[in-house]
Image (cartoon, rainbow, N blue to C red; front, side, top):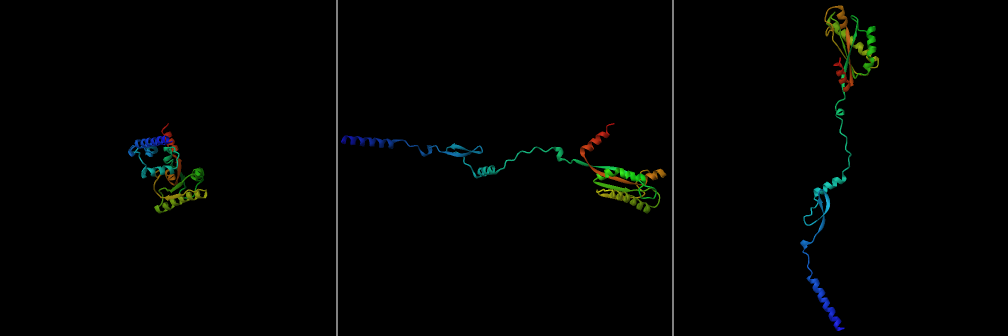
Length: 212
């Protein structure tokens, strides 16, 4: 029994000696694993140089987390970003009898013929004219009466576009000779119908004029 106890005591001494002589790793040599901010994302890394996320990178992450995915939009067609319409003016002439401001039968027929186009207009301009016979004051009044006659007819027939009226007597002659035929052409009202048309129609019309 004494021998057994002695052997156990010797074994304990050797065991303690072994523990006390086991090498310990210096604190600096211990490998510490952590999570660092590498290439714009979190990744596992080791060592004291493991990069850490800063307040700036954390803010970027938070914005990315809260961002809403947006589908890419197709590029705009250049043709759609430019104005698609242009103004086009059609001119008509209504003639009057000498010294008169009411429509003749021929004048009424012309007014009825242009009415469909007048209803499509965005605005209308009417200018009254006279021949060179009489005083300027009389012809100025007559020119205005002729323009008013045309405007009133258009309004009565359902024209909703604004109608601008101008008048000037004894000027702006179609024919300047002092013949009756020339004077007959000068007793008139000029009607200008302004429309909005597609630009491609304007270009097509211009191109067609150059083709004979």
